[in-house]
View 1 (cartoon, one colour):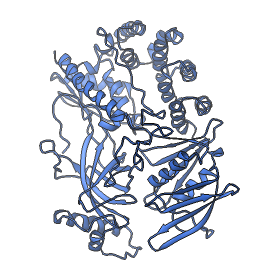
View 2 (cartoon, rainbow, N blue to C red; view 1 turned 90 degrees about the vertical axis):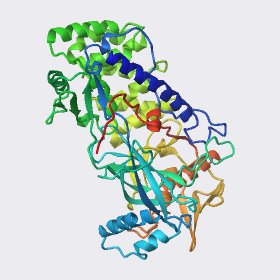
View 3 (cartoon, rainbow, N blue to C red; view 1 turned 180 degrees about the vertical axis):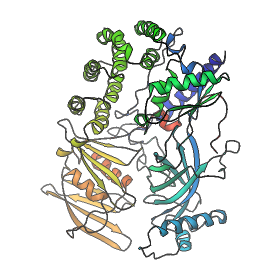
View 4 (cartoon, rainbow, N blue to C red; view 1 turned 120 degrees about the horizontal axis):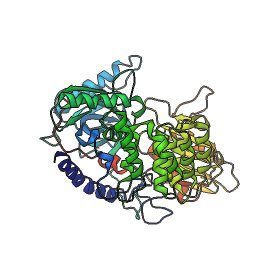
Length: 591
């Protein structure tokens, strides 16, 4: 009864959340820019590939598993908040600061300066807070489930004082984040610091055109990868019955499946098993670990496991069960299932073939690699995106890299983007990487990916500021061109016969330039975002333009067809937008 009630409550939460995710993501992509001037729709660059919901009669997949008698504690995001100071604004900040915040902000400024005693500052900490070039902001973040110490994540910032008009170009000074109170929404719990935040503020530059479905608020922004977890998050399993024998059995099953120097599971009470995320599942794979744990069989009897594996292998070909659940249950049994599922690798139904191969692939069967590659290259397979994601961990990296490079020229932009994301993991040496803007904090990462396909500019808005120029070795600006926007500091121009772009930058103290940059898009991008200082050769490294403004400029050039490339913007997944679905059960505390 407990399990049935728990599953019905989780479903009740899941369906509204999925609908909310669909409504929330409909206008993302190039964040309101639209495609080729058309009204915003779900963009070609969308990365989401969520599994289908397939109702049916109960499966053996969940029977006798850890998930059938437990729920996960700590599975949801942990909301944290703090207050900080954004500096580097061009008189768009505020001179006001609440007395209750001033003391804490002064402490943070002095602490940050104490680590750089060699620097002479023109303003005192008090003058910094009182300057119109700074703004007090509230900083919010969601610490991922099971996040280990030093795990990075995105944070959002919002101006506190109404006099602040824009956070564009600002940098958040280091600040501390603490848990938000559950009983009093918006109140920060006093106590230990759970995370810290700092970095360049990213204000989405898109969505300002008349066709846009997105309203840009210049008083709000995000720091991509700007949050850092300072404490390991608690994660555990809570049983529906109180029994030391049961929690020890659960702990043993998990540790057998994930052996290592330190135990992954520890039965620390008659109703609780503490969990640690194994190294292979950290940095974004925590959800996959929890799903697999919930499908692990409790029994360790070889006879029972063999019988279970045979029954589950038979269920893979059924059409009235969740085949994903069955595949996870088979994966939970272990390598002994490989001989039973190999005949299904070539099954005529694509779902059976894919999920059987995925199970064997994750359990180390090299024969399954061929099936994964077949799904990746099959334009009619509905599992292409998921198969590409699996190739990120392919033990035969050279095989995966060869396939992924070909996919960079695929007709489907989603496939090209997903292939690029996988390629940077399996063959990082095949991608030219440059950190643009070396000053603390760094500006963004520029990656140039050789490709024979149509050139594509792809930008990230989560994880880390990153611009990928796929086919960048052939990506150039096309004269004649002219870029100039009201309120923007840059002007770019090139005549029909010019082989260089003339760049001017307006500063408060006057005009910088002209500077002459080759027509190469990688070189232009690097120069725009590079540090505004001379290099070792005496030549100016860059103009110090922030990530958001660089993207805005590239998009405007793309929009004018002044670049021989398409441009797409990362769309966050539903989970990134609204968080992991919260498990129903006992409230938790991390104090």
